[in-house]
Image 1 (cartoon, rainbow, N blue to C red):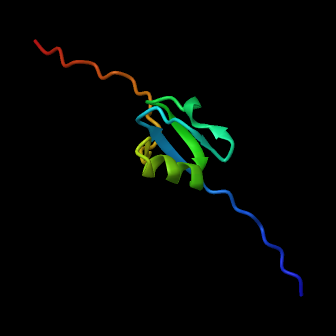
Image 2 (cartoon, one colour; image 1 turned 135 degrees about the vertical axis):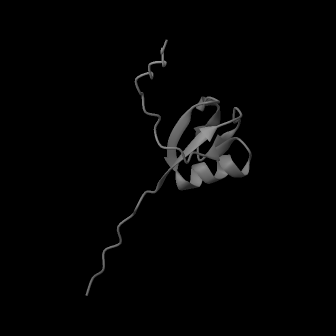
Length: 74
């Protein structure tokens, strides 16, 4: 019996809070902009969070809603 191993890539959303510096696995980290949310591999996301450059993003996408009309009773 032959078993096939399937690689599963887990993506994690992180919010960049401070401009990262340096290189991780040959990738320059300075490309990530503070205030932006990124879908990253679990390993990269973990590194950025541990080093204080990012925080896990847990919010759902913000929905655009119509402004409520103000109550204008006389």
